[in-house]
Length: 293
Image 1: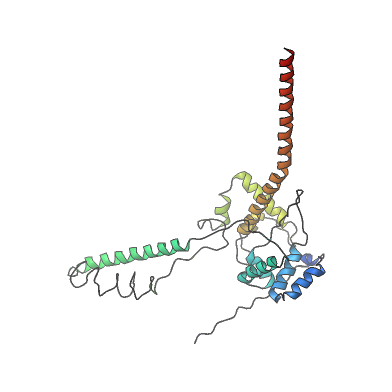
Image 2: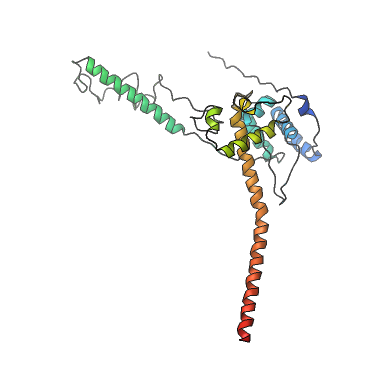
């Protein structure tokens, strides 16, 4: 009998600089948390979000301003919870209106295509084995009466590796789909290093991204002298730093574009109204000139 091993996660020790300051919780929100019996994980997540995002900011147009948060994996390491638990508890806090968040990008990986690719490679190897066996044993033909290719009593390929047998699995026990890329990756699977990633950016994009990273890391307890060398390494959660910060960089650009669009709308409306007034005055002037003529 196999026994399941329980993974015990412990919260991360906070730096002294991150424990400075304070935040406030209204009595109404405290009552909501008590009445809904928030679990220990949910309380830790709620308090952690209050620490890293203590202010409720709004744009000049009165719209909610969302701030960049660490990745799900980084939050899990900080408070000692699994990524699955973090995702579930975030939805709970949103339902209770204790904290709101939004997903900027959605990424996917085609599992069906991955399995089809693995099956195609397996069939190609099996076909080469059959061809090699037929050439080595001249007495055994590919469609001989002793080993028929579509013998109704046998499986489609052979008894060890079944393709579509009614009483066996689609993939044999000896086969397994190829490894999937990191679910948090924002780059194609061919971009695995910082060197490969940075070459995909133009000079202007590279400079903008590096300035963003310097601004985000200037308040760290330990000063970073070589930002690119620091980005090329992994963080405590095992993720590529450049991927984590590039996600935040893209989110920042998206938010800035949204704010700029909302701010430009009143100006565009005023300009259109001004043009309409000018056109009306021109028409009145032309009509008056015609009347005098």
